Length: 270
Image 1 (spheres, rainbow, N blue to C red):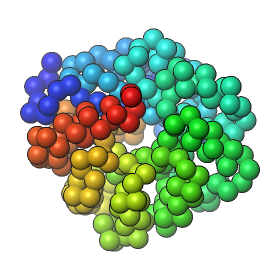
Image 2 (cartoon, helix red, strand yellow):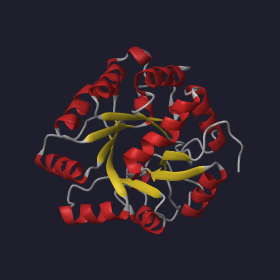
Image 3 (spheres, one colour):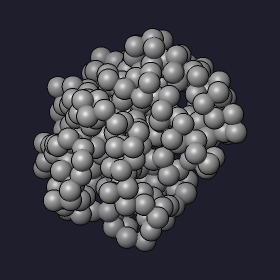
Image 4 (cartoon, rainbow, N blue to C red):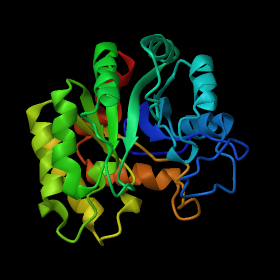
């Protein structure tokens, strides 16, 4: 096992599994050159003292979730999220819930226009998510952040913001989109993942964002995620470096235990 100053065991709340023979979505922004198989994933988690994990829906594969579904059925230490299909009925969603899925992912940051979240199909989906105790796992553009967050809140669904909200703008922590994320945390139904600092383009912004989030939400509203296998950054990022990020961002050992284990266990596994 890799040595680390962080408390063990840990919960990794954001990583992906896939194989190169899976059907890529037409909108895929990256074509992986290597498999990120379930077996390699579990080996990586075990080597770093990670006992539990949450498989994030990979946008590269759209609504294809068969591989993740089989992983959840085989390993109860895992949970997952799905890219939503608005054609699901409640029976399908209940079956996903029984398998270990705990939410849907809205990856809307790449889109110039957001889907109409107030439309009947989305209102129906969000109501069913609320009824099942699922969450919405969101990646959104800064200028839409406040409106999207409030629409999801109004639907009564718990919200998890991906990658420290990823408001990667020149105004940084003063951007209204990031301030909207902090306000949502304060209102009590939003959590944030400390993950993927390497995806921020603005120099030093990831660390600044992490400091703000730890001050606002460190004990009860933060999770940690590796974002393994670091799609698009496979050769530049290591699992160890993501753990080092967590240790740098959260320096208090008791808070490390909360962010790295206690809070995500309550949220995803209770």
